[in-house]
Image: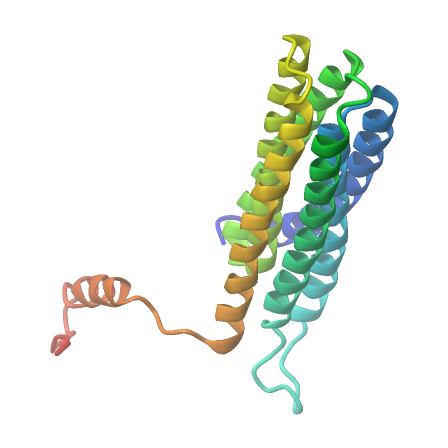
Length: 235
């Protein structure tokens, strides 16, 4: 941990992430519905899933910080990996709903071209999600928290999906009426990928997978440079 304030910052970061994602979800869904942007609504669903996962992560951080007990002598740290699994499932469900709606629109045809207000809303969402990403990334790295790092990945995915929605909206202004729907489909596929990565990250954390051989070799080389350390790796 670089600074003593990092622990307090980590807790605040998780709280602000929940509140921010919840407000962003409401903002995007309402504005997307009003302006007719399926991409913005899809981005709102993504933020809603992020808000739920942020809430789980906040709870997990409170539990994992408890000291070891007689019943749990190794502490509660792995609760964070469980919250990562739950977050991945929320993202998967959200991505599924977005993708199905996009396919429906491709089949039925575009009924309404998004208005200009959707562009401004998407720009604001892009800036906000990037700021949340940098905050959670810093806190998660300093505290070594897999849950906060998972939350930062979700914020990163949110900023990238907002960028895709922005490109889709610009496309509709250039005459490509399906560009916004295509952006929504892209966002869903991106969220699918993120959810799968987070799922396996949680699984690996729970079952204590072995360290990569390359990492072990690097640690061995560094250890042997210390005075008093003898022997080498026989692998």
